[in-house]
Amino acid sequence: MANVFDVLHKRGYIDQVTYEEELKELLDKESVTFYVGFDATADSLTLGHFIQIMVMMHMQRAGHRPIALLGGGTTMVGDPSGRTDMRKMLTKEMIDHNASKFKEQLSRFIDFDDDKAILVNNADWLLDLNFLDFMREVGVHFSVNRMLTFDCYKNRLEQGLTFFEFSYMLMQSYDYLKLYRDYNCRLQVGGSDQWSNILGGYELVRKLEGDKVYAMTFKLLSTAAGIKMGKTAAGTIWLDPEKTSPYEFYQYLRNSDDRDVEKFLSLLTFLPMDEVKRLGSLEGAEINKAKEILAFEVTKMVHGEEEAIKAQKASKALFAGSEEDGSIPFTEFNRNVFEKGIGMLDLLKNVGLTKSNSEGRRLIEQGGISIDDVKVEDIDKIITLDNFKDDKILVRKGKKVYHQIRIK
Image (cartoon, rainbow, N blue to C red):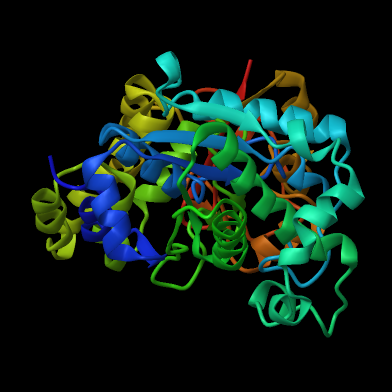
């Protein structure tokens, strides 16, 4: 079996790594316990998180043991990395709820049976820390001058940086120390925006334990247009089917930029690299076949084969102009709603396509709303039973977001 380091490198995951050759040799000769942290800032993981999950799956398949660390404690502070202001403070109840959702989602991808993987929550050791004991053991090893040179803090100095947030790096570093002591964890992995935090933990373990541990980060993925993967004008692409339907999830990937197809196939699927290269080299209309494979493979992993097939059928039906519904998101209304009539702006809000009348007004004025492929031009348009064919209409927002309205 190929060394998992080579696999990750070949598929384009790796950004930075400490002692590359040493780590590669270690991964080749023994089973390594490693960890990835997930701060519980929302009630679902996103497509952006799926990169970290893929790395965990690659590593586990190669015989290494993942620790999925839920940040029930660190989320109480919030990571300042990449932020221009302080994160919204969540209650402990909200964080606990979010962490439970993460646990449920991660269990779909990682095998936690028979100690093959470990799931822990840093709230278990961070919430009851004694401040003075913590600062005497951990704080003495961190230079404020050096910390202020890291981007996660340096970029915040003009807007203002609280000591509250400044403590985040110390807590994340302590996580590594705790996991090393409890589980012999020798490697932390994460996104490239976490490099400073990960280095803090790596250096702390080496100083206090005198052992060789390692750090590795992966590139933050963005589309060819420079947009962070999993972010759209309509919002985030979530792994929870209640927040992003399997159809919408499929469509997001099906509509990938031609330039991103090979990269996404490499990072988000387990297809052999020869096949990834072949599909990525397709041109013209043929590249759509690669996009369909990308969308199907990822949707199948996240939502199951049955939902992937339904989403695929629905997508093909729309591209072909068919009326087959498949799994297009829909909202069902009582008939009397449309006997009286409902304003277009209110309808868009009711089905979740817009958050406000001003957003709906702007979309209509820009030609971004269609009903059954006919652009809506009047912001005061009233939708009545006359607009329906076979008790349904298809509303399209922009080029990619579809929502069916049904009446009963």
